[in-house]
Image (cartoon, rainbow over all chains, first blue to last red; front, top):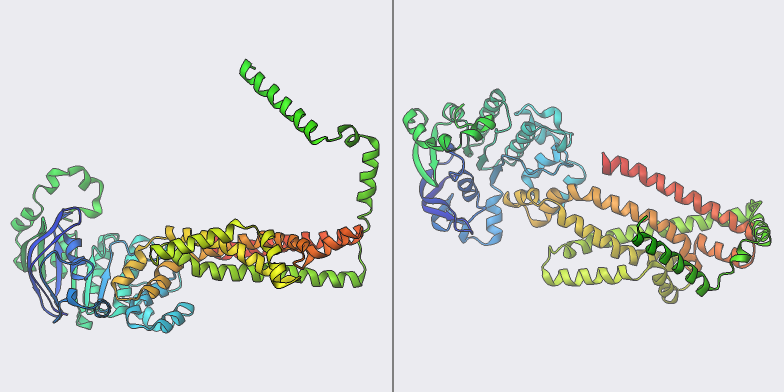
Length: 264
Length: 254
């Protein structure tokens, strides 16, 4: 799925400006990492692309359509083609992993099929395949509250893989994993997206991971696109400018929270 | 002891004495030897309990009737409550909220016994009236508890599913219900335990089951029969309590 932003801005209800004057073109099947300091607007951008929030300014085009001119029904159909990977996957604690993964295709299912699937999972094979890519096939029948944070994040990814979303939007998808597992998981996600021909945008705090795995990098700061470059063209100076002051302003918080440090 | 406490205690004593005087309780008679003998005599008439096969056949029938009344009444109430909980939690707009809350308050405000009296008039003597009475009151209680559980369930899982294109119903089934139904089950089981005790009493106003047998035996001074009925009631309550304990351990706590 391709997408295009021209002059898009977003202002929260409380007047806080999260995104300003964004111009962006993404072709079908591209894989892009979004980096930038905390509060730069990465989550807002992903939510805007996922049709969760309506831009306050400018034009947003998804595929060939403008989603916010759709009827609610058409918007729902469009959303079923968008997969969202959350930093803290919102999965019901008492739900089994298999059901959580199969819920990815709810947008494509009839109510009757959803009910039948709730009583007894209809596509064990499909859920198992999606989980196996993330080395979680053995957790198929566990309950979500029995999993660790990193495992939950991978279940959230498996749900989107099963959904076969044409646009995958990942917000800090590997923040709860150790560096090795994070790299392995991101690699699987990128490979799966490439196989399905899906467009993938992921926000990441670990710059090295972004540079190593994604061909195109967008640096976001104060709601503006600071740079939009191929990975090999991103210079160390640009990176320090992107994160400048942030570490000076709050050295304590970076020290306390090693998983979220800007550079790893 | 300070002065204020002294005044409070003596005030309390005066109030107790005044209450006895007002009710004209005959304390002397209550503590006399003759009362003790009479009491012992009355209690002795409950023993030996009636173990006659024919009577126990009748008792078994009444026990099943009481069990069925409480089970059907609670189950129907839980189903109704689940339906009413949606508007009563404000999910279907403010008007539906007011109507649902008002209806639940009305159902809950009238006790089971009063409902039973009304239902005996409406549906005739027997277990039908008892079942309806339990169902009506329990719907009021469970509807409110269900609605409050629904209000307190996190909305993010359902929200996330909505953002991936599922309908409101699907999002409720996959995002909200998994967290919700163990609580709903726990509330229903608890009310069932209450209702089985209530079902044994409803018979006193003619709504069938063990209560009706107890009422008849006591009225006819057949204390041995009454003792058998009370034994059945005890067994029923213990059985239901342990059954719902097993269900709770399996589904709610685990």
